[in-house]
Length: 380
Image 1 (cartoon, rainbow, N blue to C red):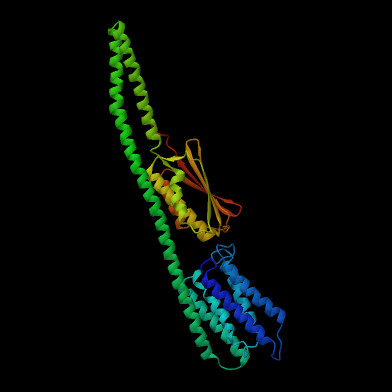
Image 2: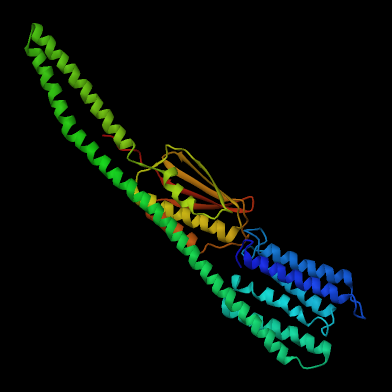
């Protein structure tokens, strides 16, 4: 389910606590006392595991590698309570299995979750029938319908969350692309003006400087002095034009820091991004910038969905004519992890840009190193 403490999680915790309190209340007057310490331990284990699985991007959340083992432990705690507490007094304990199956759609497909729910209901009420010595198929059907209902509701919730996440991701990409297009438009206009200044004004000033130099050799006296002054002014003006052209070309490029910034604005609050990027690193190729933004987006999504990270670090540096970007987080990755569609897409995008990507492990987390050619700025 949603990996944060939302209303669904609070409702589940409240229901568990109510079942726990009622069970403790009923345990007092019944004749045969079960092992109270073990009952309390199982109830507390069930509640703690549920809280861990539904925490906000926790290390033991449903999406982590501990998700399935903890789910099994939670179900074992529920069945342990069923075996310890007499079914004729505690027939409401099946509510615990309803809470449990409601989490299944977030770790498996809906049809498998439904099959698992049916299996749990079958096993649960088989034990109840064995304990009570009577038929319980009507109760099993009723509780089974609640199990199926819980699975279907949570499946719908999961699909809605997935659609919302995809929409947010597309929105982030759209904002980043919009900024890139605006920067590219400004870049194109500055480049056009710089080219015109260089090709037209610069060439005319060069010709004027040459003509004034020739005139200086052909004149004498006061006229020569005035021509020399004009020659110096023309040379200064030509130098100013060249400096202006170089400045316009320099600031026409897109800053890597500014290009990444829009991607971070709509990230969930539980994921903090630390940037270690020099402000003078520019992206001079629009296609390279677009591919790089998509790669960054995929890397951040992987940290959110798979590693259970709370902080991501993105650093960039220039080395030997190459741009090297390192991305890692404080989450964890399975030792036998395999590249999925996201990683494959990164490799394909980098191949189009003439770059490559390297993988490593840093403090149990996946480390990505992106290497791209870094063209020098063209001068006027």
